[in-house]
Length: 282
Image (cartoon, rainbow, N blue to C red):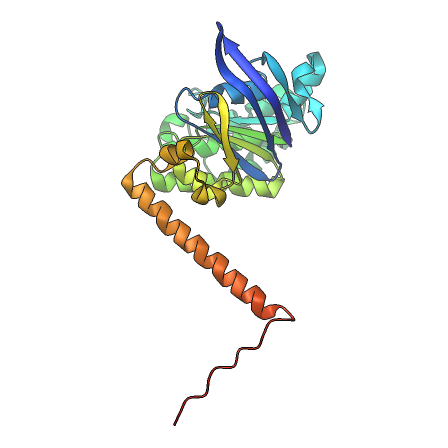
């Protein structure tokens, strides 16, 4: 679990993050959304320690990461996996070498053991047999999956994804979303995703933090966002007439589910009245 407490960050006197707090739990996909300049990228960089906040703190499982120094902070960073926006693969290295890079940096395992782990994570992201390929030989979706394999090769407790669907077609984006969600749940990782992709919001948003002009404007999940009456959030998420219609349809669908559930609960309740249909006249 990651807790963000009253984070503030300014550059040259301009406030970028203004007193933001959030709790991001393990085993779920925690999304940070907002328009360009809303502060979501700066918030993520404060969370991973690339920026030092002017005020507030970031806690990893109750430990104050903001106040750590030296070896303690390094240990936390070893537990963090990062999926970069452009995948950030080394062009001169094969898929196998790219995924093995963190193992070479942070472990003293034998080559055989490292290779076994590389093959394990490549299989997990459905890239069996791609070991000797170079990034130039891969599609955009394959590059993302290699980058994801590299991000999880050290068995991280925390996974940060910066625009994981950037540059991908909608169908491939769904594949990446589902893969991230599966891995998050399977390994009980605290996953934090910075995204503009509204499909991601609706598909995998267990927790959603909406940033507006450096402040936390709204928080909730992908079910609650449908019923939100926050005007700024609705203008951002459902900007077009098409998306507004889609929201209206989803609201009707969700209300129908709730109504059916309540009817079922009433019927199963021990005090529920037994409804006898009226007899038809001959």
